[in-house]
Image 1: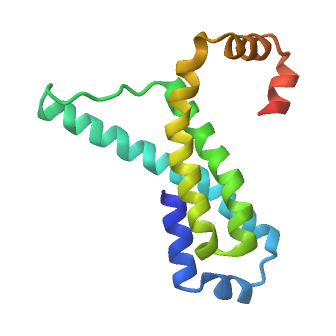
Image 2 (image 1 turned 60 degrees about the horizontal axis):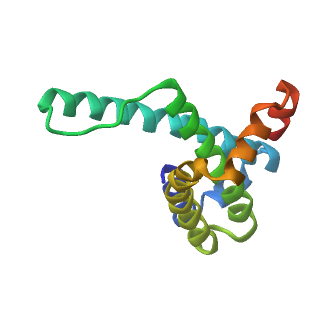
Image 3 (image 1 turned 45 degrees about the vertical axis):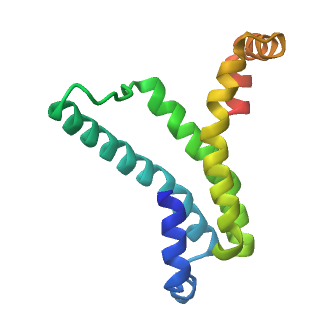
Length: 144
């Protein structure tokens, strides 16, 4: 959501005109957008950790999900997936037309991911997991 908001502010303030006036190549601008994914991810994770800490101090009645390195990696992978689809659409058609794609990707990814893991008992999912488990390190990195 932070990326979508940043793109909205850039569109509203006509940042593309400003960026085109600088001696920057298009590649540099695009790479900066992709690097911003990691900056925004770090900001969001930090906010979550601080808010979780504060809520744990307030009272034990609030149920919070624990943060583990695996959950952080899973969240970053989801964020990278969402933005790897969203950014090309954004660059091609602009914010106004890509806004719907961004929201569908965001809510679709986080709504369907738990459903995907709930289906792990079915034979098809077991075959997929078995296949992924037996890939070599090079094949795994190529897929990622």
